[in-house]
Length: 310
Image 1 (cartoon, rainbow, N blue to C red):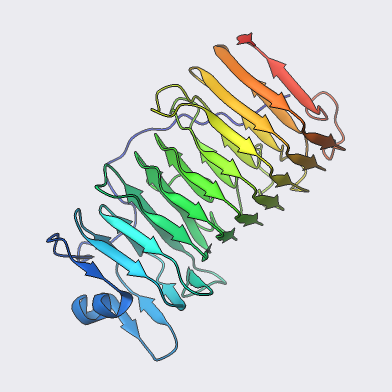
Image 2: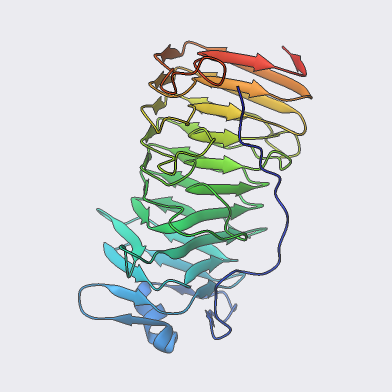
């Protein structure tokens, strides 16, 4: 059985963004979308029904963008929300970040970079037709969100996966990952991450039918809270070449995987690496993970190979 190997390279550029991007002042402001509209000029416009972001918006260090009302925000193809401060999303019903053109377009997405003085919190947010939610050196709370139809474009600085991790340990709860083009949650083989993924739904991801699982992670040991927790999730049918959960670390792995339902994937769960793998795998329902129909490449319920397993 083969797994997709991803070695992450660090890049300092934001691919596709424009030189004229708007940045908040960095003076400790706490703004709503309305405040941003009043200050960002033509970078964001409002037509009475939805906002349109035409250039990327940077939330500067010390500043906060709060979205506490229901809203639809549409993004042009080269735009993104770049967060160096804090992003707080918690509407009564829903906030949607989507592409201005969902047929042939897409947009970059959201990038949250640390270290941040406060923790970003995303609740009831739908992110669709983006490259990804890119997390770098942060540990935000992501709750009751929907990630669908993402990885629409490719970007070296936004990564792969609907949520792309770089030295990050988010708490991801009660969220749905549906029909994303590549993995739902992804971290590089040589980059340590420690997400806590609890009570989420994964279904139909990797629509490109690449050689990746729905949750695709590598090493974990360099993050302060260094144990990955994957608890009480449902990982249901994905594309033919998609596994359920995969670890291919260059480095150590610490993981607790418990009480998940993993059904109708290429394989259920695999650890494949030449280093120390420390995992507790318990009380999971792993059923009919043989969709590729080639036993030499897939079909395992739970597989461990390489390194030292305990």
